[in-house]
Image (cartoon, rainbow, N blue to C red; front, side, top):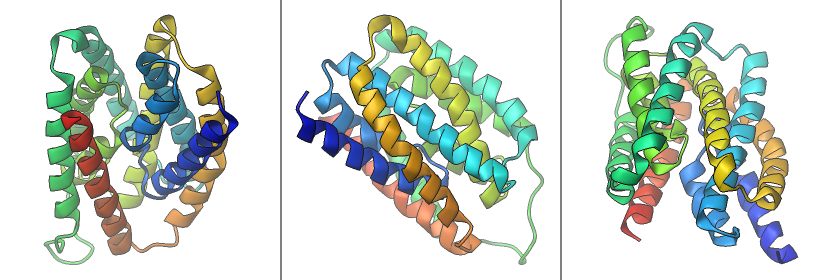
Length: 248
């Protein structure tokens, strides 16, 4: 593989890891087109992308864990449901229209992104209790969709944590990344038999580690309102990218 292609992949993975580490997203759907373009085959590229997502999520999650931004109670409920959903989705993926689902996912991401720019209602400091049933149900549903389209879909899980589970913003970021690590490990294990482009995985993972660490360090410098706006902006980009991938 040409050295310039590998260098371009490394730069792109670093940039997406910085953005993802900042707002608690893996951004695999934004990284995927570049990885697949450079890969030896689409399937090998998808496997490499899931592996890179897992490494980026694990790196950023470690930084957020040290900063105590992980809700382990939600992780223990959401991660198993997410992994089970991802496995179920991968089993039936051949029978479902992946492109159509990407368009739907993209539309939902845009709706969530716009919602995060709206003023928050209710008195300052008032918050609703966390919903464990919502964590299980949304984890399973998002895991299933991710298994069908070959993505971890942290960009969909994070707004679900904020909107339906009522997780606090900073802790939702770390929680989403830890769950993403679990889904990423399951995903690369499922793709290993069909092949993974290990060269791209190595370059992308190596570039993602410093990027994810940098992004995670920047998280604590934003107040909650600016953090939610940053998440919303990235969701709008991720949603647009998902729709374009579904149409092309």
